Image (cartoon, rainbow, N blue to C red; front, side, top):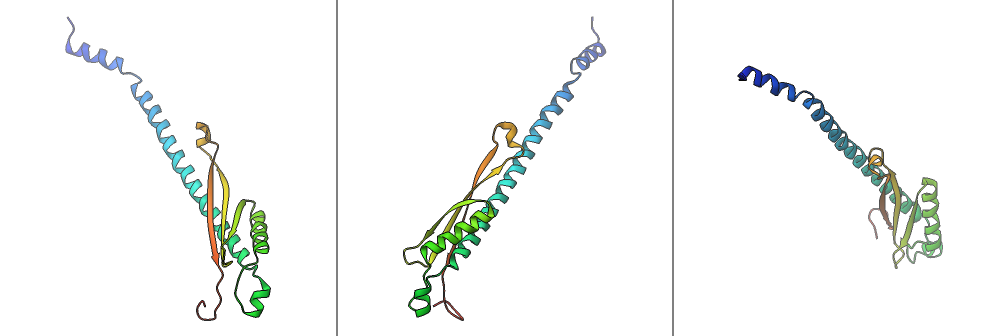
Length: 148
């Protein structure tokens, strides 16, 4: 007949190594969570960078005004070809691609940037990159103390 002490000894021997398996599973799960957090933060930084580049490209495009109308004081409008060329040149210097649009009245410039973020940890799961986009706009205004 087995004593209680023998029963406990047999139970303890059966659980040998259980903590090591649990620790390995928890470590893998924690590494996955940390990887998701780091790649999520990286994508957020890449999106912020794309927004900043789009805003600067829109500002660069806003410098390309139509001189004929600006000199005569008729209106302040962007030259569509020159504005698009200025924005594309800025995007090329920044090493990214995007699109440029001009409002029908020629006073609102909008730039959309498309880029990718190369993942660091998610590449293990087969996700090597994530798309990011940024948007920026500039409105042409004139006036000394306030917009006209």
